[in-house]
Structures are given as C-alpha cells and as structure tokens.
Image (tube, rainbow, N blue to C red; front, side):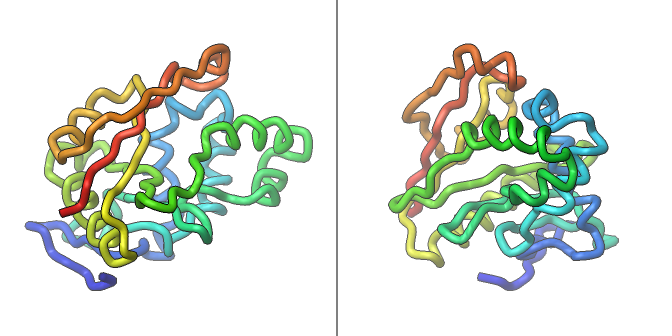
Length: 202
C-alpha cells in the first residue's frame, strides 16, 4: 500500500517530499483558495498556515518526471486529517483574535470521522497538470488506501462551484447521497452548498 507506482510519466507515492512542503501548500491553495479565501486569506497567511499544517502521512501525491509535486490527495482518519492544522498553527499565523473566529468557521466545514466509509480530505492537481489523468490516479491510490484499512466504501464532499470535480467523481462511480446548504454562511465561504458523494469499493 505504501509502494511508489508509475503511471505514464507520473509517479504516485504515499506522502509528499518534505523539501516540497511549500509547493504542496501552493497546490492545495490553488485548488481550494476560492472556497476558503474569505476565511483563510490573504494568500500569504493561508500559505503559511497550510505549510505548517499539512500532514504528509495522510495523503498520496503525484510527481512528474523531474520528481516535482503536481498533485495531492488527502484523507482523514481517527488520528487526524491531511489539511487540519492546529489551533496553535492558526494562532501563530493569524494572531489570537484572528485564530479565534477562523477556528469557529473552519470547524463548520470539518466532516466527522465516518466509521463505515473512508473520508477523502481534498484532491488538488496543479493547473498545468490537469486533464492528464492525475486526478484519476490519485483516486485509485485512495481506493487502495481505503481497502487496506478495511473500508468497503469511500466518501467525499464537493462544493457547488466545482462542477469539474463533480463530473470526475461521477465518472469514477461516486453517487450523490445528500446536499447541505450553507444558508447565511455562504457569505463567509466561496460556495453555497456541498454535496456528499459515496463510491462503493469493489
């Protein structure tokens, strides 16, 4: 489950190279910044927080031929999540007051640990590498991770502003089971609703 695998000119591996932590933060923010900007911005602070908080033991990554990071697929376990970060990290980056209100809003986005389905914690592919099968390869690694942990299904949330990602998940066999609307909280985040999707693992 932890071995590196080749896909064309891309290597899929568990974790990400420690020396590319800053690049990992940029790729993640590139994918989710529009969703989180109002809470985690400005960019420099968001990147500083992500660089501190990303957990390489809770993700798979994609590397190009030169060994440069081009994609990430995070997941959650009872021991933490890929993009969780800590309250201490929030305070160091945003200050005590800034951390207090951000922690409250970010907590509203956190999904509980599902005892029956493996939880995906975000898939991000660098802009220049999209449309080349990297997302599908990262999903395949997550399926393998989930099976290795004894799960029979995998779950994720996709926001209403990310139709491209939803189309990918539908092609991969995910089915929507519920949609949660944010109501007034839509003004704090860059989306109005999030749909839960599940795929049964064969």
